Length: 252
Ligand code: ADP
Ligand code: MG
Image 1 (tube, rainbow, N blue to C red):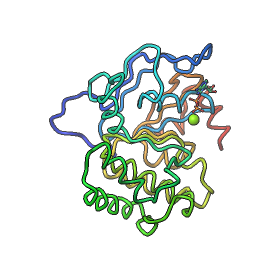
Image 2: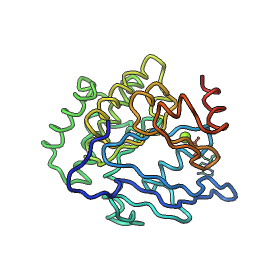
Image 3: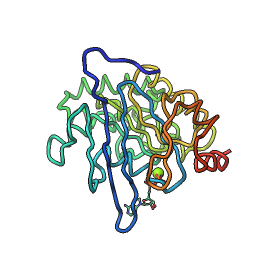
Image 4: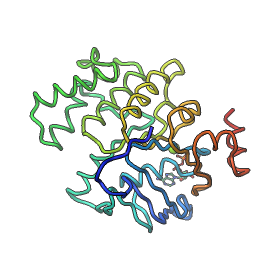
């Protein structure tokens, strides 16, 4: 599903170099080296506590790092201020808990960022928001508040909200883990659609059939390290390490 870009050089869209992170005594990210190319879908798997969420959060600077470098389009992530806000907007993030603003309509959730951060006019923001809500299949819920929607609808609205910021890449941290089983596929289908349209995506998930089908590359993390990095068929059919085999057996 990789889509090659023209003329933008060979710099990966996102690159981590020797990233280290501790929480107190806990060494949560150990010498993480990772590149995500434009149009690529990278799926991150690994046991609970292996550092997957922390990895996503450091890419977006929701967490600081102790050492190493994080580059977006070849440039170091800014530490703070306007540049950081702008950079964050370029990397969409979808969490397990949908994180919509509960007191606002779905439509207002989607227009808030474009109006406040991108400086878009309300009419224009609403027109685009309705297109996005249409695309993820919840346009009919636009005037409702999140609590009136099912979990699957809320998560799809959260994806629309991220897309409204025109991100260069989207990060998903276990986007279906909080959903009832019958709603998982409606969210995965939206993600498959995004991948097909060439969106660069980093996806933390336990949905192995999704990973097999959509990932260009699978990264397996264990105890803060990237232990394996492989094409999905290679990883799932022939994991190289005992740790990966154990993990795959545990989720069967
Ligand atoms: P995963 O997403 O793979 O389950 P996390 O990145 O959430 O793993 O967590 C990695 C480790 O860091 C876990 O041991 C977790 O308990 C710990 N951890 C995560 N966030 C914090 C935090 N804010 N403070 C202290 N420890 C944390
Ligand atoms: Mg996690």
